[in-house]
Length: 501
Ligand SMILES: [Zn+2]
Image 1 (cartoon, rainbow, N blue to C red):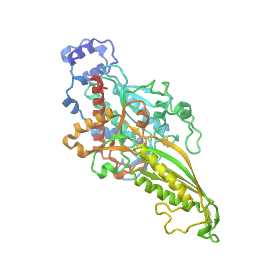
Image 2 (cartoon, rainbow, N blue to C red; image 1 turned 90 degrees about the horizontal axis):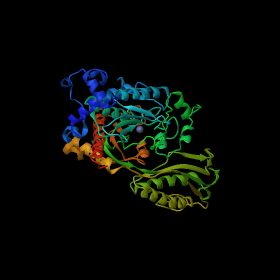
Image 3 (cartoon, rainbow, N blue to C red; image 1 turned 135 degrees about the vertical axis):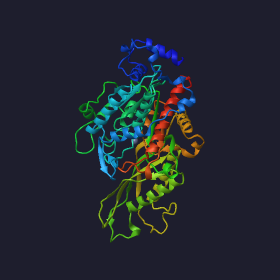
Image 4 (cartoon, rainbow, N blue to C red; image 1 turned 30 degrees about the horizontal axis):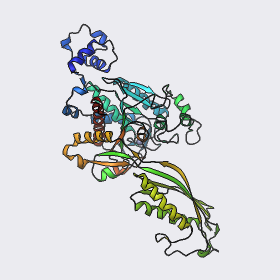
């Protein structure tokens, strides 16, 4: 359909809520189409566009505005200001816990801002906010999603950039009066951080039917408070009536712009991470049992030293992971009885194994299981018996699986949209400035990918630092990420229009 035909169609339409009519009336400087009957047709500005009528170069030429994006980002950071780390006005961190009073202020801003950009905002039973801008056709929206909540000592970019970049996409479309073929929008997912209510990505998890709503609603806040997610949703007025479900609020695709939270892009002087998926991980608690004994009267030959055995196991896990280009880490170590002059007879430690490949996580685990049993028995594995005194006594080891998160593979079609967007932006430098990556951390996109085509876009984090007030991404890099985000969403919409997805 040509623009002219669409324009005439819009002028004869009885609806005044259509975004292109609202856009036109704003462009003409009066409030509603109903009052334009006396205006001559020739005085109207032919400014709105159907995305399908724009050539590829014209779409590619659509640019987000860096200054406007950074203004949104920093203005929203006035709600929940955290620790100061520098002297400039924006050199503070963030402390905006989910469903707090400051989170409510940011949410209210999200609603007001997106409604002014022609969106309808739906709030579901987990307080997720879906701001949807209608397209030429009805259908599930293609969205940019992330989160506005932060860690208690977080920064200004984790999550916030993804939401404000989505809003910058809406601002760009709105200011140029462009209507996409299908609806597009922005989602603010509740409590992604899991910092206040202790399950991260909990609300996208309910939306994807991976976490029961009742379980999420009953989550108590961390610390001495008695509030639950449900009581806080009610208190701040964000317990929505729409059911929290991918069936009630379906999406066509989910794109998430996020800071890398790691050092790779910066170190390699690249600008955009094209995220292929999220790595698999398994968390275990390993218990080692030996025997308490006196440190002064028990010779090395007669000890069952649980901590010494555990230490060798932790060293071994590092080697087992390193051999396979995976990660293994211990973050918790509990030993008993905890006395200077008693050899500990009981040790428990956490083991976190990660890799983009499920099979590699399994291989590291299997290797460690065999080696840990041998090390507990006092055998020399991988040189870990060298220079130690052999003992007549041995320890035993047991494993408990705490969490298993298989590898997430993002949608090839969404990844193609991001690559295409980056090529459009960087031209022949695209290969040099982009990198295919796997996310080391979990994001809402993990859950959305279980239901709809999903991918993520990373931008550099200074020194790889995140979950820290000094977290920082250059404004230029924020804008490059927002640009790729918008172009990827528009590409996906274009592919839908052509019936290719
Ligand atoms: Zn985040």
